[in-house]
Image (cartoon, rainbow, N blue to C red; front, side, top):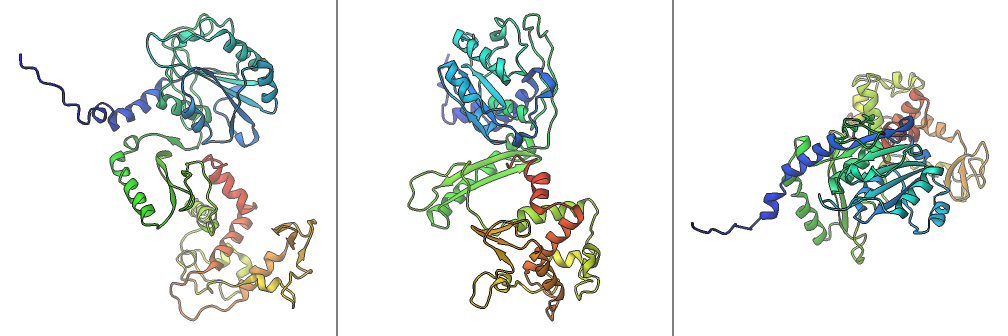
Length: 426
């Protein structure tokens, strides 16, 4: 026999390929089991109206589970070794998710400790509780009943992918399909398991599961790092999603060039001039997809008040392509100032009233109907002499007016209900 040592170069990558991780997601999506779901508490809906707490039991890592729960709404981790103190801290919350996290391994002890059982009993007695067991289902055998539990999920292992997929089942990005491989006493027989509803919210998976390449997406990293090194930007957050699944999400750099604090995916940026592209435009695209407008729809059809305007024949296509001969912009704020350059008291109020309910700044409210003055100005303004590309703010003012009159809802409500809420952007 000729001994030949194993080449360990790239061994980790060979044993943990992108295809392997893609398969893990599919396996957990089909394995994780919802064994109790009173009143269809899962998936959690209308979570903007809920106050949700997370309590950790067990002695293994839970960070991936919590961070992914927090992708969907605010979930507060509550800690206290004293049960009475813990219950006081949980009073403000409407739902409590309890994760039982135990290290993977066939010979590991996955039993609940006595104090953990006592904690569960106390929470279940007073709160809507969702217990998620990241351990063998045998860990539930000592339980005498599950009457006070609203939902019970068996996730089987405490791996990173199990925690991600389980969080998605709780919030509806994935439908549960799993069945118990063993019976849990007389409560839940083998092959028992509920299929939960899949909601229109983003989930997470690998690029390979949506026909993309993790290796190609990894090429984003050096591009952003090069930009930061060249001081094109101090930081960046990049997210790639396809078919309702996030396949790449990373944060790079620091908030400022001088800072030493690393940017996180949860950090918020103070950005400007985005309402047009993330609020108005998606709503207009949805109107088009629904057949409510087409490329040749004239402005006079979208806004009948423009029937007698010189803009009545401008088409939807011309508006969207900035070939509508509209002025680029107008400093409308100047029209609201008096002769001394101060806010005109006929237009502004320093206090909120039913007639002055639109807040402009601290202690400054504009008249409710002033937006009609702006619309009338645009309606009566001159057209540019040539039909050529000219970016115009007027386009998006008119599109906002169209959307709100057509749908009888404010633009912010439309954007939230149609897009931000389903995407978990709360």
